[in-house]
Length: 292
Image 1 (tube, rainbow, N blue to C red):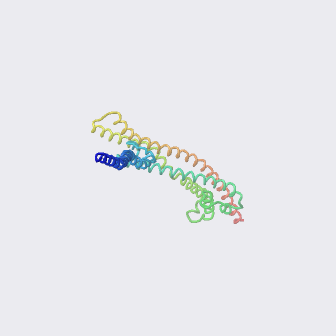
Image 2: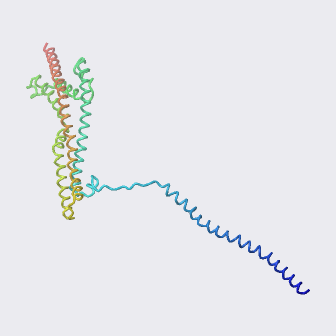
């Protein structure tokens, strides 16, 4: 009887221990797969964190590498000595002076052409030389010549001047006015001629000086390859090109202005000759009236 009760009690204890231990193993079994899952998801965090860092890198615009040219005008100016820089400055001054004179003289020629038109259309239709002179603009060479002729007829006085006849005195006064106009038109042409004849030689001097320094530097370095020779020598040849670029516009501008001045002076001389006849005839008529 006791043995049966002991067996029953042992069986009950085993059943009770099985019901208590089973949930514990079940919880451990459930937590065990979760741990690898958590460890599997753990590396995803750096991937997500790296995504924003990759976005700015993709958004950044591609930059182009700028390679500085070791030759050219910039390098020539930086590496040149005071003689090379002085030569460049002289040619720059020549070029600016030539273009300034050329532009201003062309403007003067255009104004002179308009003033010649006014003299043809307004001056000769006036009732008198004084009235015709008043119709011309201030600063006009035609008005200057007309005023000179008028003054010559009104101020032919003095012991020495009275020894000159009126015809000669008026002719001399008008011719002096014409000469002043011609001298005014020729201002600046000497500078253009000087630049046109000397600028190529100034550039050639800069080239010879640059080649001399380039060959000296090559000899000191001991490297005579084509890449070491072509750069400095070609750099020095830029001086000759600049000299030609300065001289050619000066020569062309000089020839153009000389032709324009020639045609303009023909109109001025024709106006002066007609004015001389009109002024002299008016003066003679006044003298005749006084004598009568």
